[in-house]
Length: 380
Image 1 (cartoon, rainbow, N blue to C red):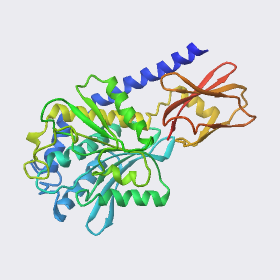
Image 2 (image 1 turned 180 degrees about the horizontal axis):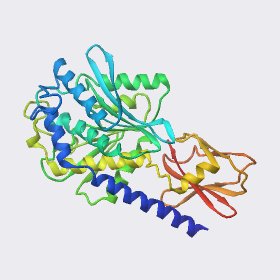
Image 3 (image 1 turned 90 degrees about the vertical axis):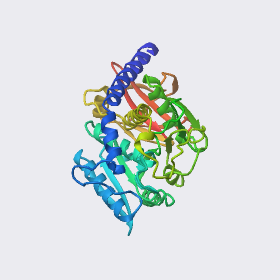
Image 4 (image 1 turned 90 degrees about the horizontal axis):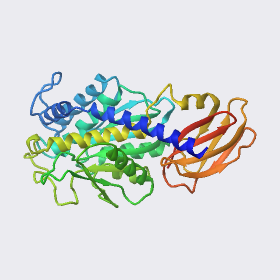
């Protein structure tokens, strides 16, 4: 039984790796560069002309209208979050097929302090647009939110308003991937940073970034910063204990963009191969966090036979039988195939205490007389 379960987990992991590689291969550098050029005003967009800047009210108005339309062009339900008179977040939502109320957010701020500002932060904004272009072609178990924040430069105002409202409304935010300045690599070492704070909830996402990086052939080197900086929009979510990480260039590794917060911050200073690979990595990571829906997978037969809830969970997970089926036992494995616990079912509903498990992805295996059923779940 142990061998069959390990082979089963391996087959799921192999399929996931191949799909992630395919998704990352769809991330196109020319698409990223074109978006940066349009956001910085280095070239006009087809429908909105030249965006004059992103540091004045009129310039940011042009920018948010452009961004909203770009998301709509990909078939994503989009809206302007006009949280105050001169504040405009752009929020696109791609509903999950299984857990539509659980959200993974991929985000960046689009405002700036001067003209151009390609690295800060047309780079992150364009990567969110590219994520929308690529991921909108797929269905995911969890909802993906594509968020573009206003007024980060004024003190994280746009993202703080969103996070505060989410907390007030009881929104289930499973994780936030924030990109801020991801295009400059002056010394060519391809090092990037992941800032994770002090909470174990963020380790899962940082580990997922590392896991996806290991599947690639990128030149990138990951440097995890604990606790890291609170000077970008991920910190708005830290304030409400939502899992969130920042992906950025060499902020603490002596390779910071010398054109920071100036009109010299142009596309010509960005190392495009580095920028492309970080964008691919983050988009691939989001695809794994949100869990690609596969109607032919073994989990589809699981859903016909069982209910598992809540997912994600913090302490307890429930398994409820939908069919008259005899269960031998229920086991939980981590994604390396190591057994974490085994329990025997009650008549209809089994309550499994997972509070002591580290944050991460797990595989729940239901062993019946003639078949193994599996279900992935997230422990926050």
